[in-house]
Amino acid sequence: MLVSFEEEKTGECVVCCHRCGAFLMESASTTSYMVCPECGARLVVCVKKGKVSVFDDTRSEEELAKKRHARLTRYAAKINEIVK
Image 1 (cartoon, one colour):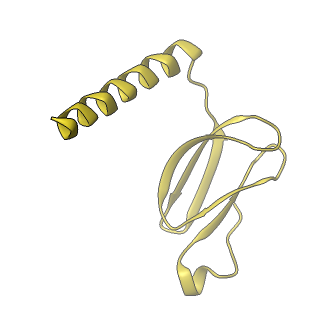
Image 2: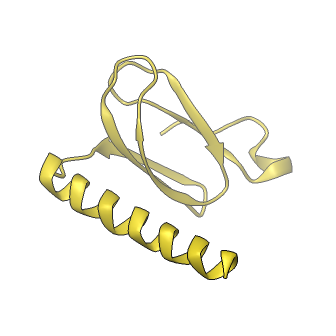
């Protein structure tokens, strides 16, 4: 776990890849799925109450495709509501 020296002032933690050590983000609280910009590993990042967890995203490509399709369908529906 890596914690920023600025944590006392901002409450944000520094998050780095657990494989290669690349900087990923600064956040006070989040759960994010991302790809490491250095090594390309698919990761899950959880920051909660000053504690940082970074681990491999083990979801299958099929599951990722289904979630992506559902998300894009919701976006399209919202855009259609706005346009009308």
